[in-house]
Length: 278
Image (cartoon, rainbow, N blue to C red):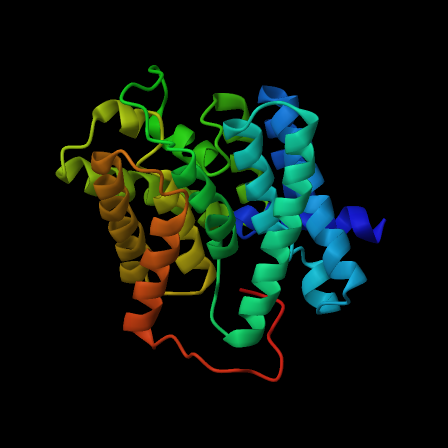
């Protein structure tokens, strides 16, 4: 039961939600659209969670799912971009475990929020090696704010987005409200650089803003920083889209680091131990 609790918490932590029901809602949303992606996500998260348990990495952080949320994103990425073969089920497990190890090592190096950096370190090099580029044309008929919330887990469809909104609401109206604001601010910033409007409607310009806004809200930052972070993420996203290059969630990571540094400085040091929260 503890293993299942940690696994669901990890999936919820993608959206800064330390809530098992939130994790279950996200799983349901993924299953609705793609059972295959749900399988790779759960397998990667399970591998990361078991590795952290076997290595006895920070039990409290393990219970809160902090060693698994990067793995969940790795599994989702492999489920979307790779072939649907048993080999990629194995790679999802290995990639999930690798992301957990990277996250553990980073936490020991410096007490700063590492967010989804391990996910990016595992998947982005593979995407670039495979020559993956952003498509010139994307599906139409999407609502940009809902699709942005879903695109965090590569699913812009309405049903998973609504389920994710319900998950965010479990943490309070603030989390849900700022998620929508982040999508709008980020997309608006991208629009200033004349990004293809279809990208905006498909959520590609907004999902990093969603994460940036709820991250800064979660940190307890003032409203100016909660607005600035998604704006910066949107500008970074727009540049990458103009170049046709994948960026995953790096704009979110970099934008939040920049805002935190401007607020109070990112303190790089080797702590005796790190907290169980980002």
